[in-house]
Image (cartoon, rainbow, N blue to C red; front, side):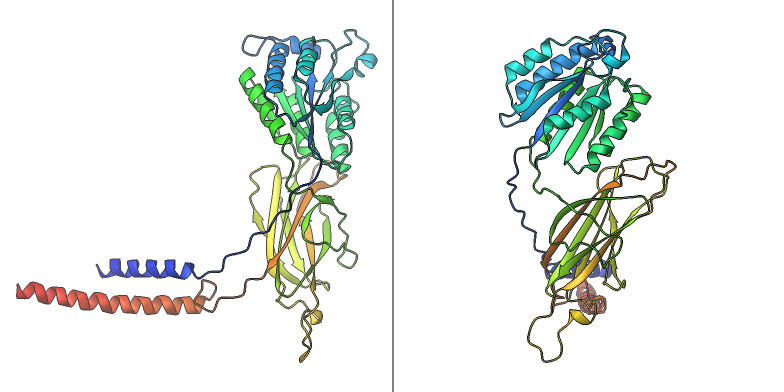
Length: 426
């Protein structure tokens, strides 16, 4: 009974103490003023699409019905285009067939009737120039500042290499064009699956296998709707340096860069004395890597003294690794971080060096381009230690809990003696 009462008192004390903890201010996001995102559907119309192995219908007829349903459900603001591959050349001349890709609907506001009419006339015909179609689709979407997305639907691997579609995807990602390629495999075999996974991961996209018309329709809708929503923040391209002395100076924001296997990338951030630095990095794994790897984010002084080391964080995706850290500007970073005695002017911002490194290794020789990296930097008001007991003051917390336990024990003992005395009298 005494232990039960003590646990209740301690629990109440912890709840009360938790209410004294400072609330971290949230970062306000500025509304995006970028132009509307654009998306292009790229459909494989090669001869293999004649196969009747999806819900008893041909792959082509299933794709047509899915496309028509998706077009009917598109929001009015969607900027949509449609490109096909293997749709016009029925011959055996591979040189000619591997150039067979056309844009049948230009990227722009949705014209539902025109889009459905263009899809209805398609017939499975020729080769599968996936790499060329991806390169052409990227050109269709242009090079503006808006987010761009390609949704590739195919039932087989590229039959026209070169260009290799995975290499094309890496080239597009290396250009920093804010382009994402999502891939959908219609009843794919293992080789096709591997190729489509490589294409999607190279650009930060997703891969899905569709074994039914319902799966295909639902996934296309999801991807197009996602593409139609502009990102809240458009990452700015930046090039990290090989050392802190030459590193670029960054303000709060979101940045994109590329990091090679085993490389260290350096960036500098000015942190005022009354501010707290919050930084996070995510690296997309766009190529096969050896097992046991990781990403590390560190903050250091300009002379190389480590201030804080980041902690790993789950990203929710198996093909992305993340890490983050926090550091307050009132912590000493060197002579420039504090004002001389008697000087009333505030101290200049402390320059903190952010270092992104990795422990990747690969059995292949593909080291360039580097893997996509996204760096988020935030500066918020530093939260000072509370005057009241807090979880950050270990000895004080133990003292408070000990005192609470002592009081609870005394009360419990007194109540027990009173109850026993009363019971004997009765």
